Picture (cartoon, rainbow, N blue to C red):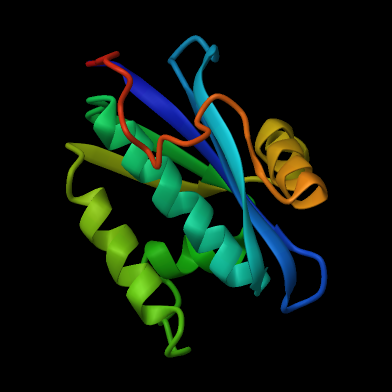
Length: 152
């Protein structure tokens, strides 16, 4: 069965500050299936990172993806999702719970930390969304909804 890759990134200019979330869903050969970035308003970097992961997981699930490798450049989020760190901040607990629930939709999910340099498209989409204060990419306006394409 095919394993897809989800790359996520969130960022804020200031902490809190203007923020955005972005994702890139790739097929096994590395081609981009869906991508998007959205402006979040004023929030923290950690909230933006979680929002990116949530949007990406929703999109992958809506597309029928069953196996997923998540690559994120937020060490904190990766370690919290993998159970290495506890989620202590009250504002993070509902986001973490939503990620955990979404991950149950998949047969298998691996969440790993990558350097920003290995996450350039998601980073670029997050920055473009912050710059334009809008939604960008082909995931615009979908909220993660499928456009009919189903994958293994």
